[in-house]
Length: 281
Length: 281
DNA sequence: AGCTCTTATGAATCATTGA
DNA sequence: GTCAATGATTCATAAGAGC
Image (cartoon, rainbow over all chains, first blue to last red; front, side, top):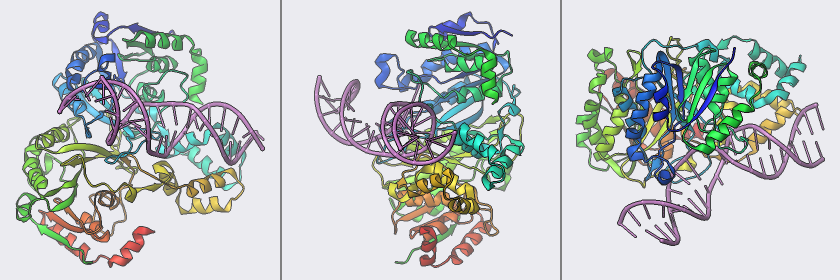
């Protein structure tokens, strides 16, 4: 089975016009966050964020299949000491456009940015808003089950490969037995709070989000062979992950330098079989 | 120093009228969530939640000191497969009333209610909306510092007593040394994601929220001797915690049976010295 | 090989300075 | 005055070096 992964340079508003209705099974994206200072560099002013977003969301609605999902990773900035309201205004506006606000997942960033201020603590979470076109949609809950809850999962991840090997070999010690018990238990469904660390060593380009985030939603809301769209794909993370999982993907990016990066990343991807070996491990 | 803890029976809209302007240092509450089915039992219809809440919030604004905080623990229900919008509409309405939406804390409930649905996972978080009257307000960040960050704290708590003992006894293994390193570090500031477990063994009465939740905000936003208000105090948790921390408190509750419970709980409270010993441990 | 220590850094936020 | 840029603050990770 051949999997397509296409990067389109341009504004998603125009680029999507050539796609037919109800083509994609999942739209997952982390759009440019509103930022007043970056206005001159192509950023979007918070005051006009909703009106900028809505016509693009109308295209998303058109190209999404009736059973598809739209996952929007976003977080409002503070402005003048206060949380800005453009994100919650966007939720209300999208509902008026016909979207169902099915769920709000929380991405808990364990390694959030440092800092100290007199009136707030460090911001360690972002919204992953889940919109759908209908109340019946595709959801493969079994695909994202975790071994006995997030806690053990985080712990196993922290321990690392070497530790797991060591625990396996240490049969008889109390700790080895404990780990074995965890691994032996049945899988559990996750909650609507996701705990991924932001990625650090990300070869040069600033990653919009960690691979685990699109991976989780792609597994949850699509099957192999489905079509995934990221209308603000940045350096291509979503398409990389989609390809690795055997999903077709289209990524749209307005900045030429990011398109270049994304295409290079996709070309360097490991063959599918190797990737799958990695993911199943 | 004598600390007052008063339970008032009635609707907070009327009960607050007798209090002077700018009297309270902190308002922290978990109001009755909107629920269509409970309408007849005194619940509030989701469609009219904002208009029901606003006049009460106007009173809160009046009785809150300029440097005070208003913490609203709330979460929208799902209705007809979709998240309801009354909470985000309430945020917008409160801002029009003059409140600053300073921050949104996330209460991550690690042991959330079980269940399984075709279109969503278990709901493991609630909003703790932080409103203020001005950009300069009282905030004692040092009062809620945690030993070496939430991550390690949660991990240590989850491990439990037996695991810690075992780690201690296994001197020489790499893991034991690691734990020792964590314990040796200095305190760290928390983030805006709070991880309290919901309480279970709470002597008979079902707690609306765990004591740790009001405790955290009372420590953070008040000093000893300050005045705390919970306009929907339920079984009195907020007043109990305030009293234990040496803060004066007023709790208002419309249901007589809850008032009775709250007054009985307060009467049974341990003397202040003992409580303090507990909290400092 | 495995444990420990060092270092880089991540969609941050506020106060201050300068135009 | 308003707006934009700069500096200071600061911690959980992963990765890599060193013993």
